[in-house]
Length: 347
Image 1: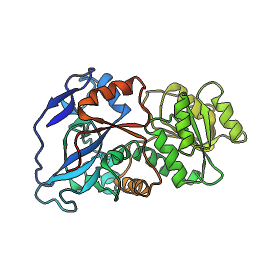
Image 2 (image 1 turned 60 degrees about the vertical axis):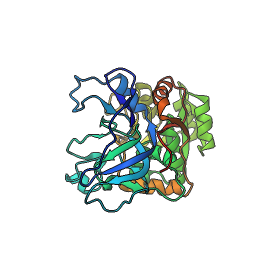
Image 3 (image 1 turned 180 degrees about the horizontal axis):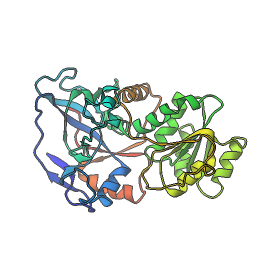
């Protein structure tokens, strides 16, 4: 089968021929119907190296946002059947630590490699999944190509928003910084699941226009006046929740400046920025946190929202032989919403 793999650090990925996986005991092979191209993959491609201490060995196939159809099952597998459309919950944990037993494998306390992150992912015709617990049936009418980006680009902001839901009542304001692959989902999730006013912030006019079309109440151009504008919209109080989908020095500074006392600043983007924390450098009782992915239970809820038409990712699809071009376009900022590689059609 064909697969898009990292074969050498700090180079573009290559489309190669590899053996089609066969399921062992407890395992499932998924025929890939869609695999999302994530901005974090660019860091893996261009910033990572073999001397970083990661337990990763080259080559491996990219793609951690995956949906498709059950193709084959190993002995002992129950709960799924051949031909069933499924999404892959990519936050694979050990299944036995305290976090995994609590249902949050995304915070597994024993390092486990995950699809597209050290082991073979979904930028291929087939994906080997270690257990049926990592699969979520798709609601009727939800195509795998549309479902694939929900497994990360949707799930990560969904988790970030849920953890702040106590601060997102009818009088609250949420700020979404960066209306890209994850940010455009955050706007929709906020509108579908909370009564908060939503302010979108981005440098690109087309991104702000997309945010407005998806329900954002206000759109603010990122820059020197952004904090003043946000505070003006909120009557000088600031935002109860700021979701930073960039994570640079500039966006963190914006987030702190726009945040309200007792608020939340959640850093989702991995641009590598920092902000000095001291008693007088942030608003009183501002909680600052990072998040990683989301739980399987949250993915079930998110897919239900999508199946009911309450949220939808902005998706542009590409064939597998164009996957390397997709990452180049993503690097150059030429894509909006989420790019999804479709290796093959329905079974």
